[in-house]
Image (cartoon, rainbow, N blue to C red):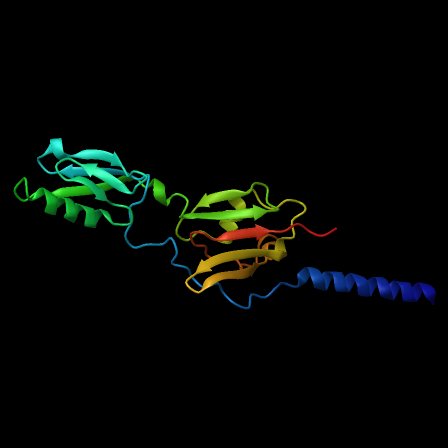
Length: 207
């Protein structure tokens, strides 16, 4: 009789274990999409390398870096504040000012190295991953992409307790990420599309 009871308990325990392994977490709310760091037109910033080309006037054309004061210097025009404006706006401003010196100037401005955007357009992953990373944002990048770039989870990671921290127009938002479900079961409900300045944290298991 005792052996029969023990056998039933063992079977019940095994079934409960199988149920726990087969269950998955449910995503109740999809993250709010963020427009922070995503712009239709690039705005220049400190440290950017900028090429100013004045058509048929090579002496007035320059390759410059936006200084810490947010300005650049252009021949005949002098110092111009460029931090926070587009190349289209800068071209129009230079054309207007050069109009006092040459007839119908045509100016093209190109950002040759957008250094100022490097840290704005990044995603961070911290905690129990093989390599904590700061990763450049790419359109369409997802949670799984970032975790793979970080080398995956450590053996001590509590993947289903991971979190996504996102800055939105309404303030900071926190969303659950079920990494074990994604990596082990192929359940992609929490494989969210990411945006610039997102932060993923992966805690360790309690022992």
